[in-house]
Length: 175
Figure 1 (cartoon, rainbow, N blue to C red):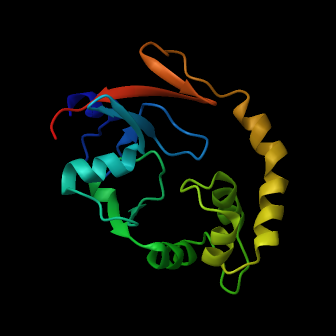
Figure 2: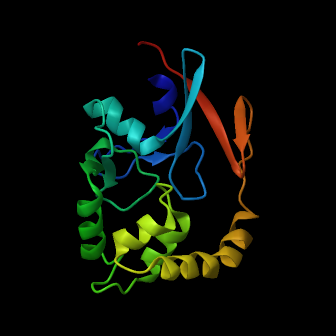
């Protein structure tokens, strides 16, 4: 997958983060479009990196960053997890405080909602009410919109634009 790795800044030190240079969604994760048999599918770059290196990702599995860097695609920094593990890691790393108190980092994550969860599901994950999640999302809208207005990428050749995101297609071969 030369086309994929051309979009990655690989460091000499294999233990450091490998930054995704391609499109980045509003949630902060690298994005790409896979084109196979005439069909297009959007996927996050870190999930694709994991799949290239380790094989198929089980349904409903999370691909979690050990480094907390959303644009990192270094397979050494990625691991499979589930919702429960992801939440316990969030508590350990200071994303979430115990007893439903959310840190600012957790609130940013809720606003970005990279997995597209419903507010009800986010409430379940973080142990708070759906109305609390709704309030967090509303509080962040004006800040997020002002931040997004200045973000763009210069080179859009051969790309597809969806919303505020410019996506490069990567052709893959095989079954």
